[in-house]
Image (cartoon, rainbow, N blue to C red; front, side):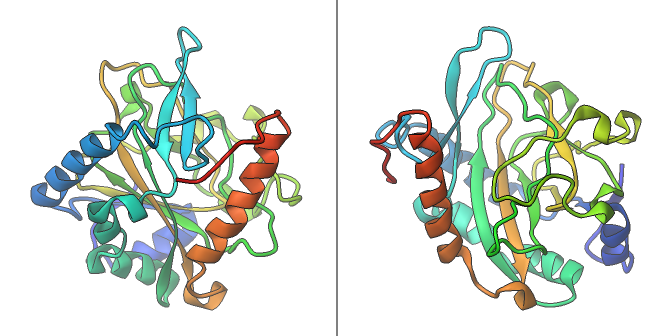
Length: 258
């Protein structure tokens, strides 16, 4: 496992070379407990969990195919604890250190990954929009333990140096399984309070959650100051229009954001 601490002088160099780093124990038990409580509260907000609400993401069970709620995206506007963590000076300092310049929050989501949820196929996070920052990176803040059994994220080091490995046409594309060497994958095993960071060009995937409980992770994405500055609001405005178009392709024309 590629692991370091906030004091390591090699953090940025490791990130540039491998495409990811793991920083242990960034947040203490008090912050994690507050995140647990907030996640529990949000999961009970049934007025928000609607298949037409474009804030919500959905995943099937790997065994039955049942479609279930999986994620709020965005989340910080309905979750003050998540908002504080997203802009916590400790985390922002780590991200800014990787960039070598100030970092700006770009995107935020809380993934619940309930028991049985299927994983995500191999892909890169970068989307070929003219407005999408090439410096995009994601920091995963572990609320629950994350491991192979509950569908932890698996990254493939070094491939980020190839840049975008799919057409830059503004659409989401999965990567063929043979586009990476499967033996090179690193499963991001995290304890609550750990943070894993990986770039937008790093191929990654996740397996199904075969445990008996949810695996909650806060996904916080950033961009470098020189790569557009503060663009979160502009991104979500564009993203919502893109989502509405994608839903309309499947006949869903009554979508809303709440």
